[in-house]
Amino acid sequence: MSGFFSEPVHIGLAIVLGLLLSASVIVSVMRMRDEDNQYKELSDRVKSWWVMIGIFSLALLSSPNVSVVLFALISFLAFKEFVSIIPLRRADRRVLFWAYLTIPFQYYLVATGWYGLFVVFIPVWVFFLLPFRFLIAGQTDGFLKSVSAISWGLMITVFAVSHAAFLMKLPLSDGSVGGPALILFLAVLNQGNDVAQYVWGKLCGKHKIIPSVSPNKTWEGFLGGVGTTAVLSVLLSTILTPFSFGFAIMIGIFLGITGFIGDVTMSALKRDLRIKDAGALIPGHGGILDRIDSLSLSAPLFFHMVRYFYGAG
Image 1 (tube, rainbow, N blue to C red):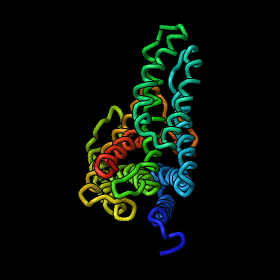
Image 2 (image 1 turned 90 degrees about the vertical axis):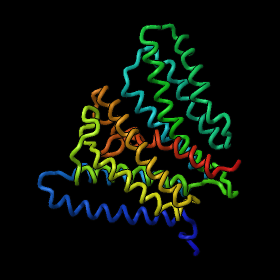
Image 3 (image 1 turned 180 degrees about the horizontal axis):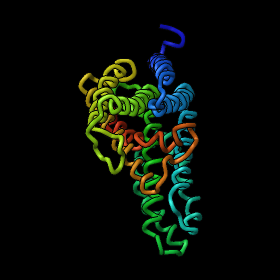
C-alpha cells in the first residue's frame, strides 16, 4: 500500500473517522425524532468524540516531540481545571507555581525516554518535596487537605496522562517503538468504552451499581461496555498493535473496567464539590478533566502491561 494508508495508524484513523461519521449521522436522525430530548447526552458524547479524536489526530500525525508537547498541554489544562474546582487556601497559591513546574519536567523525561526517573519523579520526589514547600508557606491549618488534593491532582492529570505520551517512546521487543498506533489504540478503546457503557445502559440497564455516586451507571451498561471494548480491542489490535488474540481480549477487559473506575471516581469528586462539570472547554460536555477521567487509570495500566509483556528488556 502507498500514500496515506501506508501506515497502520492512518488506517486506524480512517476507520475511526468512518465510524464516528456514521455515529453522527445515526444520532442526528435519532435527535430529529426525539421529542423528549432523550438522546441529547448521547449527542453530546459524540460531539466530544470529534473534539478528542481531533486532538489525538493532531498529536499522532505530528512528530514525536510535537505529540509530547500536545500531551503536556492536555495535562496543563486538566491540572488547571482541577485546581480551579478544589477549595484552596491563600497560602496554597504560592505552592502552585512549583506544582505547575512538574509538568514540563515530567514531559521532558517522556521526550528523552528517561524511564527510570519518569516513573518515580512525581510519585516519589514530588510526593516528598511538595509538602515541604507547603510547610515553608507557614500555614498548618488545612495542611493535610491541601497537600493531599494537589498531590492527587498531579497524579491523575500529569503522571497518569504522561504514560499515554510515553507510549510514543516505548521500545518493544520486536525492535520497534510503540509510536502513535498504541496511543490511538488506547484512546479509541477509552472513548469507545465510555460510549458503549452509556448505550448499553440506556438500552437494557436496570440494576444500579453505585447509585449514590453515579445514578445512571448500571450493571448491564458496565458489562455490555466491557464486552464491547474487548471485541473492539481484538479488531483494532490486528491493525495497530503486535498483541496476541488472548492479550487483546485481556487488555480490552482491563481497559473497560479501569475506564469505569476512573469515570465513577471523577463523578465522586464532582459530587463532593457539588459541581456538574469540571470545566466548559468542550462545548456541551465539560472540560478536559471530564474527558480524561477514564484515561487517568487506564493509561498507566495499559503502559505497564504492554511494557511487561511486549517491551524490550
